[in-house]
Image (cartoon, helix red, strand yellow):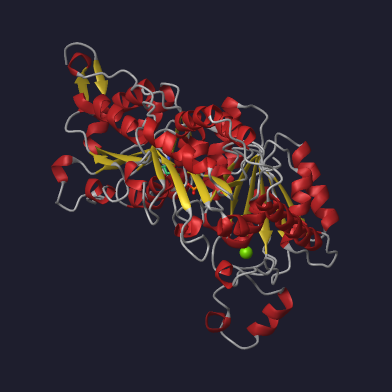
Length: 570
Ligand code: ADP
Ligand code: MG
């Protein structure tokens, strides 16, 4: 070939680099190995994982934490199929993500090629864009479009399919359509009349409530939201992943009076949160029938879902919050701190906090969830990135562990996905390593949740990522059996017929998975052992560690006031 040649793999790597892609997670194999090698050669950090699903979760967490998509690189067929959960999770969470899948050679298509699967078609359901470049020459343009599409408007996942024969094929550089880095997402603002309408509704409110969602965290709106809370004296409630946008210890945080706040608010300002199951659809009995919702979102199609809003502010949360702030300043409005509404909320907060404290201080063994979280809260660094999953572990942990910084909490999210934890923790540790050195990642997992991607502990040790994993172990899913009951039960015969579906093996030594790969493992049963293990792992900033905390297999969350709360995730 005349002129300088470039391979498909090199083109892909250079195009990703040109779009400022920093991280790639994946598993190599035919036909994508060369792409990973080329990516490393241009300075993209490549993290080799043990399962594509975890790799895809990791790449999506990079998108949420940095605002720029991470890339997940996988092989054809099964490798691609293992990313479906990650692509769906990213799109449903509104996080940017790029998945690059190898596929079979073009000249073998429909012939029953190795790992052949209709990947572009399959990708459509999970992605904002699912494409295959028609030639090597257009690869940079396709990658630019995918990166841009993943970030612009409502963020989400994009899939790029690379036929195997493209990877080592060469083209002349002069025939390639190179692309500059796409511009940052344009910032849209709400219509002036809508801002004015919203302010008019807010100033007449008697029982206002600000709900902060993970869209607000994603848009880096923390400074303006903090100003809005302080200037207007508004009570606020974060959704699970919006915890920390305004610190949980801010006096206006009413998270501990969540049900009361939702049930009695007359005006709700909804900042980047959907009225889906997490917020009980905005409907009675969780809300007043005539609650006035002021909805702020970047996605026009979201406005009006489930509840007819009193005002709709279409635009970027940060920009629109500033608009709202200006408008309320003009009207010199501040919600009085001595209102009956505040008294009601404060009374409820006090009551609820005392109930949790009572449970946390129980001395009985095995420990309950509240005791465990009480000690974790005391000993982990205040600025650590918290990853959390598992049904009770995540729900109770959310109420017991405060967040003080935005984008500091990653969990099962809108899709309620279990198995995201280790991938998220690896992504968070990579981002922390490069952007805020010294910041720790603490990954708190139920024993069942840990099992989904437990082998990623090897990945953690291979890259020496100083992640602290805490497995809150109750021998099962929701509840489990203690060792004695387990023994008794097995006397009745074949385990397959008598082991309860919720049960996992009692006293499983998950900490040995960590020590098997050179990290530190701790098996703890008492508060003292837990404190010692936490102190040791937090002090040792270099080594990955896993604390396996045995708790009462029948430990439950505290009784809920309303029956419709017990089944919900909140
Ligand atoms: P939560 O789980 O915290 O309730 P959701 O994921 O349901 O939050 O909602 C987040 C919302 O934020 C989505 O509707 C999404 O369209 C919106 N969003 C994402 N980024 C922005 C942004 N920059 N500005 C405004 N809204 C945004
Ligand atoms: Mg469990």
